[in-house]
Image 1 (cartoon, chains in turn brown, orange):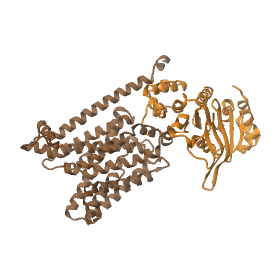
Image 2 (tube, chains in turn purple, red; image 1 turned 45 degrees about the horizontal axis):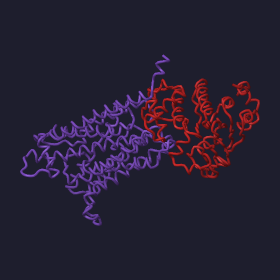
Image 3 (cartoon, chains in turn yellow, blue; image 1 turned 90 degrees about the vertical axis):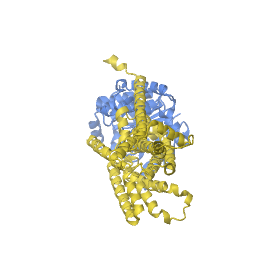
Image 4 (cartoon, one colour; image 1 turned 60 degrees about the vertical axis):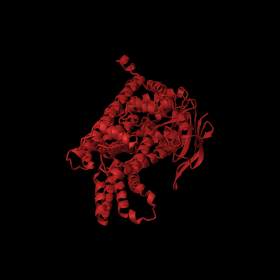
Length: 360
Length: 255
């Protein structure tokens, strides 16, 4: 027995963990890759891989000449839509992982704590009042939906964090309650915007509350893609610091981590990328809750795996949900927020029952 | 070459939590901070660790004020073990201990060697692959101790600060933790630990700092600092009861 105990080596454990990490990331990459291909070719219209390839060439200006119907669908609908799904899923997955790391709790999700609906309210505010804010130059108006969504998301995020944490100690009960309050407030705000808006504005706002990748067109999404890509990459740089934060805020500080700057990034960046996602797709819930959690179940809680893993899994899950959303009731399209919530809400309930014994 | 709190005071609003306290933690020494609840022990430790900045006075490591150090450099010089730490997510023991190497920015292999020897020092190598949440109280404290040791044990003139590391442990386990601290000090670390167990303080400490009412009441070798008279003064119990309750043989016993 003694010899057996002695034979345990940290280097061996570390290399085992390394292998399982690589295996997990490999599997998740394959899943995300398949989801991308599926998202490109599955749908009401028949689009083949060759149409997709031609569409990609055409997107980058490498192909000209006459366009077949399938190729046109690939170019103007499927490719941008898939890109949008990929980036939104990635951004929501990473945001969820980062917020769970910040709140030091696995029950956090951008939608649950009201960040998404704060963003949706911001966007709706711009939709209804944007035209009367004449001092904003027309050239910037393309960014304004995203900017207002960001303002709304960041406000919600900051309020929930301030309410939910006392000197680095997070009360999850308070935080979730603050999230409920924030969601209620944003819902009231959205209702008010619905009341004040005209018919077209009402439809636009309704769209935000249910979520859809359906409006994807390059002109609408490129700025959001840019924000989501840059913000997610920036968040990935904090993987190691998040591991220290998992041990405790004071402990992270004792290990030389600048926790104040870290927390600021962990409040602002998830709000930013979530807002960018919300500004083009509306509220898509639970991806940020489910993706990091499944990665943890697969490969442990090291953020060096949880963060990139949640990005890949989030992207894959969102694309699969989108495939379901646009095929299950074809030719009509189900809002994707309904699909992710149908999967995510039961998952959340299961999580709650798992953590019930542990005092929050 | 030491960690010094120099005439440190700490005030919150109108209340002075600590007044004019001077303590020196020397490499190779085990210093115990003792005293009743609310005497300012934790505040003093937080000043030493840099968690709090003194309202008056200064804290220095090797002659340089703490504020001169970058947070990374400070982390290489002193480790802190909190009373209780709650992990947010399930971590393996070796993963937790390896976070202690974060300030050093070395490659993983070097870090893993340090983790291995830290676990050996606390007798927890066999726990390396376990999930931290499955450990018993004693195992847990030793593993967190390994993390703190791992952070500074290869540095010269490094310090380890601990806030009641044995408060939740049974006799055997707390003795085990204190022995590890004694060995760490013998190997050259400067160790400063808050203890309520005066018998243990007497047995393991090189120097005892006895606090009362936010002031340093007595400092000195355990035999000198922990007398029936000082204990009676500080804990405000009559001397004979103090001796009774503590048990004279325990206090007087030499190892």
